[in-house]
Amino acid sequence: MARNRYPFGSLTLIALAFTCSPTQAQFSDSFDGAGNETYPGVNGFGSFNWVNALNFGFATQQGQSAFLSNYTGLPIAHIGMIKPFTTIMQNTTYRVSFSCSRYSSTSTLGIADYDTLYIGSRHGTMVWDTVPTPVNDYEWVRWSGLYTPAPQDIGQPFSFGFSITLNSGISFALDGPMTITDVATGIAQELIALDELVITPDPGGAGMQVRAERPMADVEVFDARGARVVAAPALSGTSWHFGTAGLPSSLYIVRVRMTDGTLWTGKVMLH
Image 1 (cartoon, rainbow, N blue to C red):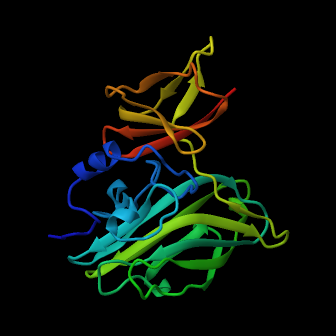
Image 2 (tube, helix red, strand yellow):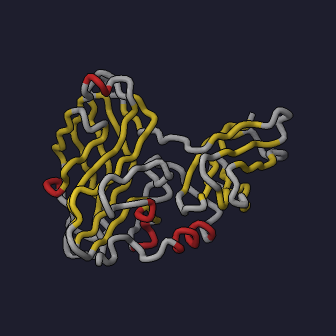
């Protein structure tokens, strides 16, 4: 039986980490676990791999979470993760990049260990040309490459995807910012994450309604500076309401812990 495939051994720690989160949050990175990721393969990765890297010895972290795995057990072939974004691919070549690292093990992943690895889609042409293998625990390195969309990619959103055969004694960490640069124009941008929640204002303007496809457990609302302004249980429903009286006009981030332990996010502008 596989042991310690994930950064921790119990899903209950996800709920604990949520309820003990500080009242200041940073949403500077769209490469965070949000509940809309898929995990190809059998007995593979899952939402439990998205954790606060600072709790595992890292000195820095982009955004709220990073994707971590520390595995001992029999090899698991062809498992991975696909994370969608909303940024649309154009008919151009992009330089793409992300951060990776290692921790608490004897070895980590080099570029040759990936069956697939892309920022774009599995249909296009991905050539990784700057791929330093992490050699020091907790030290982030930046990987970069060129991605050219396939014809069927044009007008479709970017995704980050990978597949590996996970062997015993391997630890690795993936984090943002997930960036793309149009090679033709030199214009750079960070990929924009999907909003999983539907947030609509009340007709009278006194509050907001938050809706999700799955039952919600707890809800937090943060202002643009990362200060938490609302925290409440959602009572396992698929709809939750919060009053906006007294809140200034600003962008607000809504973060929901679902009853299955996943974290979903959404954005809303109060006028």
